[in-house]
Length: 218
Image (cartoon, rainbow, N blue to C red; front, side):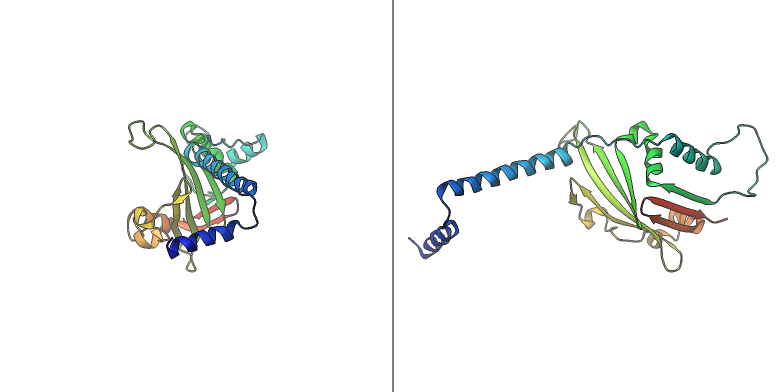
């Protein structure tokens, strides 16, 4: 027997010293059971996730949201009237529950998308159906999570940066995201187009725990 094999046998003997055959068998069985449970959890949660439960508001909460939307101009009289900005509300404040309720108004998104709001961070949980003709896992549902940092910097300029994206709990490499992870999209692309218009039109922007607040400029 070689020295390597002898050393291996000696290490194995030392590792199992003090354990009876039945105890070793129980340890092996425990590892197998835990591995099987972990596999089931991974498959159940990430590969075959259940549909998200749409958010519903109470009567009081629904009335409060309707009032906010009415003041923003989404609802109102159907009669023609002269345009005026006098007394116009330029502030938008929505709770996390209200945001998810608005998403739930779209049947196609209600059970597929959920938003979480925490300090300076908007996170999304998205269930993505895989096309039937796709070569890998056709017809299945993938669970995707993404985070977007949203805040104002020291100069009161909006900052919007992708924190990351994960699929089935596995973070996607930055290179696969076009190296946009943790890049301030407003600073990077704010000299033209959408991001410039967005930055120029925002006076205040805050995401707090469970709430988003936006104040628009005149």
